[in-house]
Each structure stands twice: as structure tokens, then as C-alpha cells.
Image (cartoon, rainbow, N blue to C red; front, side, top):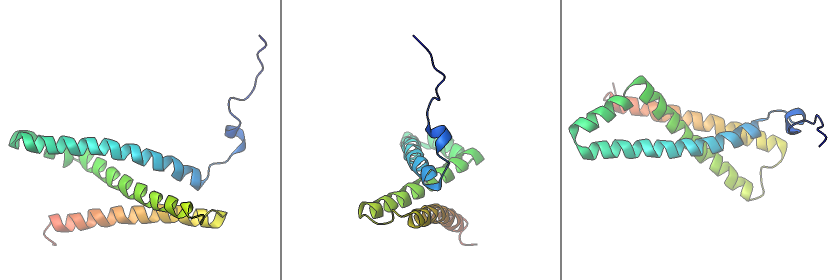
Length: 132
């Protein structure tokens, strides 16, 4: 058997990284994060059902800096997946495929999902603080 030094995959040398590639990957990753977050939500609900001790432990984790960071990431994943899904629905109508529209839609997904996440957390902090 003769071995030839061929490239493993031509896309590594031919394609350059684009916004649409990044959003495609992050859409899939956000779906995975939403699944993991759903398990965390179930954990929190089970802890609440088990009584004050387990609930306090779950609340302790989710109110820690790591827990808050995970909740923020989960909420951003939710909004990113939602906005990206809406973008795909627009594509299903046959619109938005030209390069400028694809990039405009991509940046809209990033900006809107980030703005919704920030707004949700700011609004939540205002409610938690009693509006002060």
C-alpha cells in the first residue's frame, strides 16, 4: 500500500472563517446548552420538591458566581437559539440568502440575542431589588 501525503480535509486550506459559519456552530451549541440547562432546571425543581435542605443547596449553587454565570450563559443560549431559529424561518421563505442580507441577519441575531439577555438580567435584578 502506497501512502501519499494528502491534506486531511481541503476545507482547512480553502475556506476562511465567516460569520455564517460561526452562527451555524453556535446555533447547534446553544441547542446543546439548552438541553444541559433543562437538566439543571429539573435538578432545581426536584430539589424544591425534596424539601428546604436540598432546595437551599440548589439555591446556594445557582446564586453563586459560577451558578449565575451558567444561568447567564443558558439565557443567552435561549435567546440566540430563538433568534437564529427565526432567521432560519425567514430563510425557509426563500429570502435573505444574498451575502449582504445573510450578514445583516447574522449580526442582527448576535445583537438582538445579546440585548435580550442583558435586558432580561437587568429587569430581573430590578425586580429582585424591589426596583431600587
